[in-house]
Length: 206
Image (tube, rainbow, N blue to C red; front, side):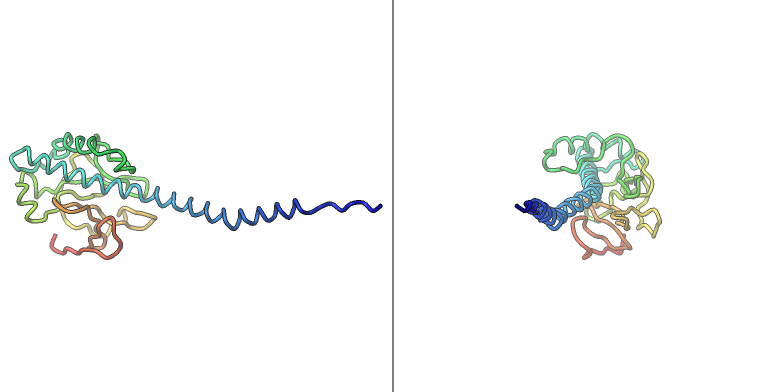
């Protein structure tokens, strides 16, 4: 009686399963990994946008309790800190999965290259009426290269710089926020809302 041939069924099933895993599960894993990478890379951008919005709203709250006057530029951050902390504390946690800017120390953002930029107050608005700043559509807070406490200077559009913040390895633009509206990114003289694509609003008179 001839010896029984060994069945290759198990091997075939194993190869089929492996093929399915490679063809189907592999792309899913790659997709998930890519999604996590994008989420991780975009998180600092969203956190920074929220920080500028919250700080601007804290400036408004300060003015409403100080006879309609904006804070002095020299210590604007110290003046609005309690208002900023209140805004952050009152936001439901499920409305911001990205985290918030710490209220202590120098305010600023991840620059996408292992460092931090700073948040500066516009000197032109020091002790000025809130209503005038709203009417003039003034830039109140803007991003600068170096993070220091109570950073302040006269606002001007940044020129090209090797230190421009990055996202996905490319220049992302500089944050700025006015007394109304959402935070914007200024890149090559063009303002882009953070949550949109390349079609942007342009302001040439700031």
